Length: 311
Image 1 (cartoon, one colour):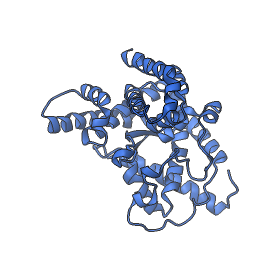
Image 2: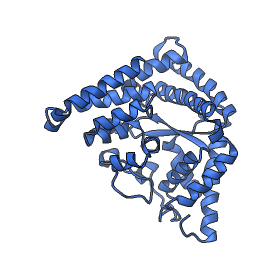
Image 3: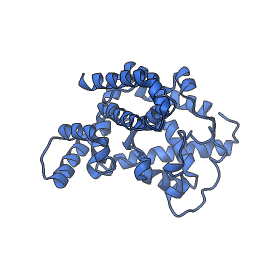
Image 4: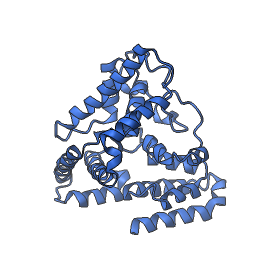
């Protein structure tokens, strides 16, 4: 760990424990609001703990990397429509996740029936939402479908990798994450009062490269991230849409195809989202003549995505 006084080290651990407890308590309310969302949660914890919002995200990253919680996308960032990305959080407890999965499936069916006057199963709704992700993004049904689907993914992850979600592994990994963490200089600064949470974070229009966790201000470099084997972590932190847009901005179509072929990205919803971003990029070919040089790679990537979606 970075050099910390005993007092500051205790404050860091206390803040991490407080964030985890709040997520756990919220999860255990067993309702449609049992998965805390970043647009409200980060600001609320910032105010409660009297620390900057960036420090709350730093804590969430540590909890996620030590497998104490799952962090997943609920609303995809849409700069054109001024919609910020929103994440959801759930503790890595199989019983809680299974119970919440049933609750959110039911809430999804109810919300869809109310909005479209049609009775469909949660699975059918998730399939429809995945195929029309842009239309459903940030709608009540879209949010519920995202949470419902991701809870199922969390359950599968626990099933297939149970040893990495046991307390012994979590505790060891937690100590490792704390030990190697680059503690943000502003972590211990007192949170300044402001009008809202959104005043404490940058507007989407100003974002040119993915925002690093607080305290890490190096330029985002796709090749170095890939070389260090941190692609999966990068996608978890920034979201698949931001990662895809960054790849396309740097003409790294082959890199994105590679991570799909290596099963780093497997969810139909994520593949559909990448396909949609690729479609928008192609629409810019008349403005960006460099894209014409990558026609073969673009076609290969689209073929790869379509093949995975069919399979």
